Length: 313
Image 1 (cartoon, helix red, strand yellow):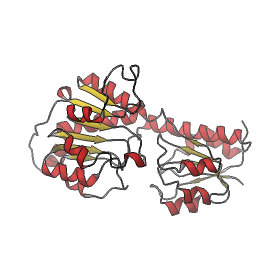
Image 2 (cartoon, rainbow, N blue to C red):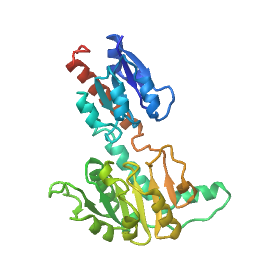
Image 3 (cartoon, rainbow, N blue to C red):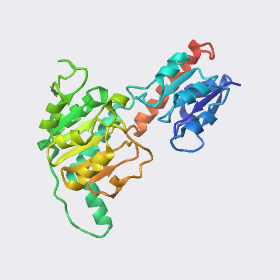
Image 4 (cartoon, rainbow, N blue to C red):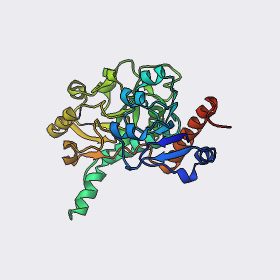
């Protein structure tokens, strides 16, 4: 009996008609038994010889993992990025890799704005103080008075720019790909340094790869204006977290908000700083967005299985 692995930490199988259809066609579905991001060895164990398709999360689908999965025919990611997948190995083994590019856009953009507002208005600090018995209003800043630099102006970056514009913030953007139509609602700057020099909030919306590992390093952070805020809802590894910690402790940066980390689950020193808002990689975790992502990932898997002759339309 052919098997399908759902390796995401959670998945609403009961309300997914596409996967239920595949079950009726004889496919056995294996769920993530750990309820968290899988380790490389755990993925390898779950990808038995009979697993022909996987709906993947952010677990490492490395060369070793993919090469060991002898029956694997399709990888369908529940999300946007492919940095956790060894695309060269997948291509060499003729395994298509699908993503769900549109589903998480609104959810990630809204979380970005939420984290930005929370950091500016110091709501996390105030809530913690109040719970500890201290009634002390904290002075924050207006989003409407800020200049926000958006690094990466794809689907999410553009949505963030639209939302920030509604608050009255001035938005700047830098992207490897530029063009007048792309930046219709936002001022496009030609260099990364221009954005860094003019902005007092930097928000990151770029995929992770080896070329931008620790793009936000000590040099980048030192170029940021004193009192700036850094927000990251894209991928961990883009920020040198040690350099960020030092900049926050020194006061060069006023605050930061991170939803993603180089090592997850995160347990580092940033947890000790009150001016930092941290969330557990939940950018796409809005019910409506999650449902859409799961539906799209299941449909991508189904379509590939039909194309390969392994499932019926």
